[in-house]
Image 1 (tube, helix red, strand yellow):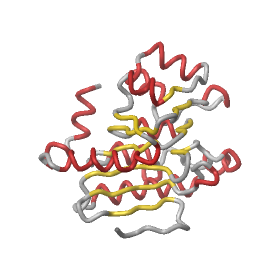
Image 2 (cartoon, rainbow, N blue to C red; image 1 turned 90 degrees about the vertical axis):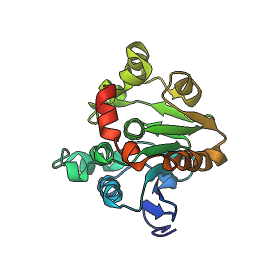
Image 3 (tube, rainbow, N blue to C red; image 1 turned 135 degrees about the vertical axis):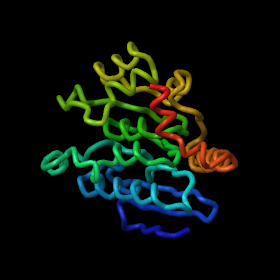
Length: 219
C-alpha cells in the first residue's frame, strides 16, 4: 500500500491489485467534515478517477462512525465562498468518477455523511449502523441532491419520514429497502467491501466503467 498517514484527515491507500481505499480519518470527531477535508476528499476522487491503476474505490470512515456530517463548529467556513465549485465538491467528483465506488459504512452516516453514502454505487454496512438526515432540524437545504436521490432508493413516503422527521434509517431496514447491499459485523465491513471489489474487477473494465451511463439510464 502507499499514501497512508495517521495525521492526514483524508487518507488514500492504493493496493497493487487495483483497489483504492479513501478513509475519512477524524475519528475523535466522528469524522465530521471541515472545508479543507471536503476539498481534499474531492481532490482524492478526482485523482483516483484519472489513475489507470485503480479499478474500484472503497470509501470508509475511521473509528466508529462513517461520517457525522459537517463540523458545526466550522460550519461558517464550510458554507462561505463558492460552495458550488465542482473542483472542491466531493459529491460532484464522486458522481463524475467513472470507477465503481463502494461505501463501507461502519457506523453513523449523518446528513452530509448520508449524502456522501448516496453518491456511492454500493454499500456494505455494519450491524447497527444508521443513516440520519438532520437538514430539517437545522434548517439547512440539502445541497447534494438528497431530497431527490433518497426517494428513488427507498420510496417517496419513507424518504419523507426519514427527512421531515429526522428519523434514523437503520442499516437493517435500508438493506430490506434495497439501499444497502450487505450487512456484516463491524470488523468485517472493509473485508466484505474488498470482496465485492474483487468480484467487480473480474469483469470487463470497459463495462464497469460505464457507471455514469448506467446511473442516467436508471433515473
